[in-house]
Length: 628
Ligand SMILES: *[C@@H]1O[C@H](CO)[C@@H](O)[C@H](O)[C@H]1NC(C)=O
Ligand SMILES: *[C@@H]1O[C@H](CO)[C@@H](O)[C@H](O)[C@H]1NC(C)=O
Ligand SMILES: *[C@@H]1O[C@H](CO)[C@@H](O)[C@H](O)[C@H]1NC(C)=O
Image (cartoon, rainbow, N blue to C red; front, top):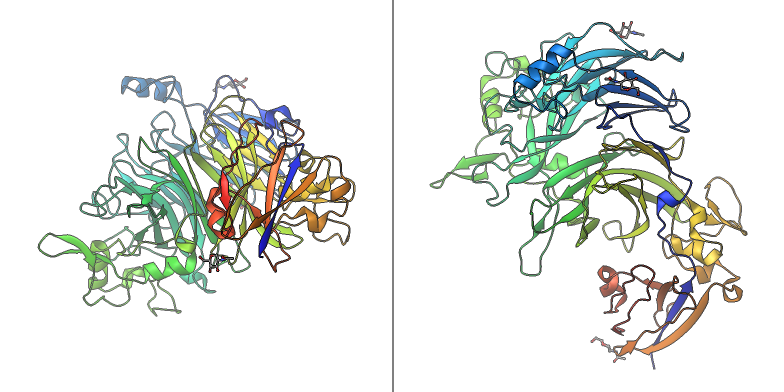
């Protein structure tokens, strides 16, 4: 008779600890007269974290943000504050100088802009090459097209080769939202004004700007923008907001006769992140919240991680989707969206596309034309009328790598670290939420890279009160994570192996790629250290194969239950402790490997139809399970 062995372990340590109880969290609780600690710039070379907040710029020591920080007060002038108040704005909440742009300019200076009480203003911040300088230049520049007027508006910027790319609103009312290029020697360039085909609606928000090379020739370099906007008229009816990726050529100088000082290479596509529903109606995650680029050996092909939430007021959900550049480039080379037909609906453009294809950068690689000012009129006319692509960009694997619903929080920020482990490389995500917590999640390939299993390693509270996390930076050099919110700045270690307990099995079951059992404790794993005694198994988390002392260890109890294929059985395991963690593994006939029986999502694969739940250290209830 074929039978399965189901193992049950009970462990004495809970995996989830509240971070605030531990000493690993360092928090700067902010100034009484400031808020909005959300403009972060990580400066690994100088070992500093620069933070722009309300009326202030801070410089923190990356080793310990509380060690000795420096600060500069940069408030709006009293006259600008008065004007702001007279214009009907809230003096206490809106009429300050909220720092929104903090970008490296050259070896010695940063470029910095703030809302300036609804009167954007920029300046240089001197840092010195290595010296201990931290001072604001005495002359100020107009910040229009660089920083938003309204502190509530999300904007994004990138300074590269002396030029500043900004997605922001450029007027007091917040109506003129656009993508600008300012600074540098050239005339400023922007998106077409008052044209809803280019950028649409009131809910426009810019999330990120990145340079991604297209080839080895810098002439082909492209700037990619991540934003959300209202769906175009008649497009995806019912969806108010949609997420977008936009592209521009870095060497776009605008048109000659038309589109003068406007982008001629701007294209945008929808970023999809959805899960199929039972009734055929997909659940869409359209509210783009954050984007993280995981660089690879090939700078042309970073992996793009994006965090989304739902637009619905009733249904709260969050998701993480992953995209690759090949899919994005394919969409930008695909059909343009075009309005046609009796109902004037959006269709793929079928006609002749003028040459050089709109969206191509002037370069020797593809086009053989020198400047966008040389583009033929028909190319410019076509580009002006067709900024949107017809096909959306779908995520890797066609669906999110992580979804959270039925919880009373949403995701807000994300950073990812690539970690070398004993059995391969893993991406560990740190996801910030709108209630001041951080989830540490590792994605583990099951059969292929397109089939990932997510394991939540830790869930930590990082601010003293529930507050949205609005900024995150990760330092691989320091192995630290830095978090910003309205309340202040926090710092935590990427790994806290000691929380996984005092036994090899506990360390192994944690499946944290940063940690391994070294023979006496759960500690940091270093891939270079050739110590054969290190025990770690991220892919399977199988303590039986890793920990020889398992059967003899007091805190772990292993019990096997035999089941008949295709039958139902009741899985029961009564641990000694109320705080115990229970862990089931299934071993199929003629298979030496044991598979962990995990969340409901993974059950079809292991063939069990039960789900397990535990809350507050209570014992889980075990519904009957059928083995296949
Ligand atoms: C806020 O308070 C700090 C001291 O806590 C002071 O250095 C700073 O100048 C104040 N900022 C403003 C804008 O008044
Ligand atoms: C950096 O830019 C600032 C502002 O334009 C300038 O004063 C400074 O000399 C520049 N530094 C270097 C090293 O070029
Ligand atoms: C279990 O079910 C599968 C599919 O229904 C079938 O192929 C298999 O023979 C069954 N095994 C036993 C032992 O009945």
